[in-house]
Amino acid sequence: MDPGPLLDRVLDDEGIASGLDEREAMALVRAVSDRVRALAAGTNDASRAAKQVNDLCRQARQIAEAVAASGTTGPARADLMQRKLDELDRERD
Image (cartoon, rainbow, N blue to C red; front, side, top):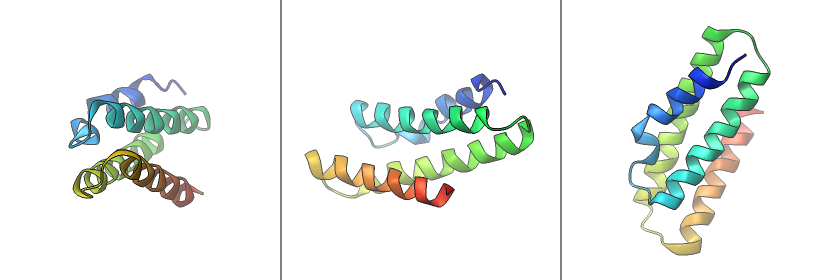
């Protein structure tokens, strides 16, 4: 299915970038967008895909909140974000 409307949902969710610096926000949005494209490629069920994207956006907001609240900086902060994204991948399997 066309990923465009699903990607718009991600890009419209300001909470995904809340508390992150620009580089972190871009990395999180890119990671979520990649997952949305893969999701869209694997289905034709628009309502199911929309629900999955809403769930993914909720999880991305939780990642942003955890990273922002961590108090870490530099490489430790980047590692935390990567660990959270890896956890997200494991949840989807």
